[in-house]
Amino acid sequence: MIRPAACLALIAVLAVAACDGSDDAGPPKVSQKGKAFHPDSLDIAAGQTVVLHNDDTRTHNIRVFHPAMDFNSGSQKPGEDMRLTFEDAGTYFVTCGIHPRMELKVEVAPPDGKGADEAE
Ligand SMILES: [Cu+2]
Image (cartoon, rainbow, N blue to C red; front, top):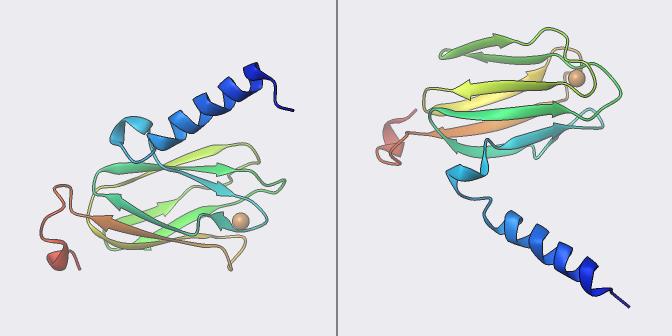
């Protein structure tokens, strides 16, 4: 038996989740848990910021090696957020300097969604 109040709360949560695709929903979030990125691939537009949250009990070290971005977060302690802004279109691989099997693929499309073929 579901109480009416609980049912209303559930509907509210679903309504928020349904809005996820828009830019107003805030930056895409990626969880780091079990020494893996969740999700492990992402499609975004140039200029967008991705928030990487360490849900693990261990320290991570976010790294990006790309002609357009050379990033090293240093120690990312459990519970900490790191923000990565992808200014240029292309394919990026976000890895962890401590756990080499961690990999997040980020496909960055041009900001206006046109000329995707020229991105790479
Ligand atoms: Cu790690």
